[in-house]
Length: 202
Length: 270
View (cartoon, rainbow over the protein chains, first blue to last red):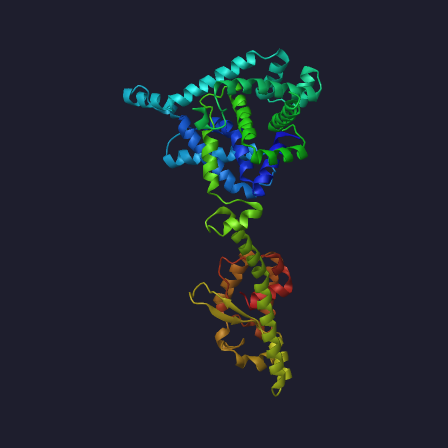
């Protein structure tokens, strides 16, 4: 089974009336979609708004989704269109590179746009999470670290990782799971109650 | 310890499945079972979220704030949306503006439209056929009805012609091949019958017509048109002013190369 097929199981559940299955898809892809939208808008808070709108549009269009393409490919297109429409409705170019930076006032405006105006708490939390994950990765045995990095950074399938690491697919599955468990354990230790929700996190 | 061990082992296996499902490496059946479990197990869903978070943190996605705010807001918004599938009809009654309702009603309309699309022409054809049958029966019932039916069947075709000189449309009648039929039917029409003095074309205009016609027709059809005009029957010479085709009307269509068609062009000349 592939990621596409796995997502399709969740999509079909949504189409059969299981809203929480859509929540799983949102949780899985929210960061990717926000990152995608950030190509069009510089403001992370605005990117989140657009991502939210894109997911709601996707939910409304889901009855028409037949699985001809992967869910994320479909979602990707919706997100891009939503971002473009958002920009068009505000009548401004995606990136303000063409502004005259010699003008001090305009330069200040660009600086404000390019800076991250998201809440300091959110950014601090993000940095903290990254720090925990990186330190947890560093503390992993080499085979677990290699397996999780090949999966998350290089996007290889279990079969490809098995070929690269010269081990059975079952071993790869176990190594990736153990790596995630170790990182998750560190995260849970730091953030009491886990990181399931923003309110719980902050 | 012995009591806890099977439970933690079971959880370990379940979490391992969750990790594999996240990567799309679980079988479809296992995936379906775990998806059902995820619906009612908030802790498992939190774990799913953290797996996504770990991936995002590892990829160091610049500008992405590592929290679940988007998911939380989407979930709140989706709660107001209709549920699809089996429970969609129940939700559809709540609000008419929701997508599922729209989809359902549009589907019903589409079915109705499709049926009407085929039904309308069938009804029209049926009515036309009925009227025609009644007319034939009625005509047969009249004194001398048989001959009227035959005459009606062989009646000349009327064509509305827009002459270039005149803005108003005029009616020209195809000249019948048999003069006897003309005698029997001409009185039924308001337009003058072919062969009347009014319909004779002045020689100059006839020559103009032939020149205009030759610009667009092939050599064979041109020759046939000329021979038809010069050596034709008196009825065929009756080329009404009304029948002169517009200068921009092409008559070199392959159909018109046939002598019979050419004759028709020359006489009833659209």
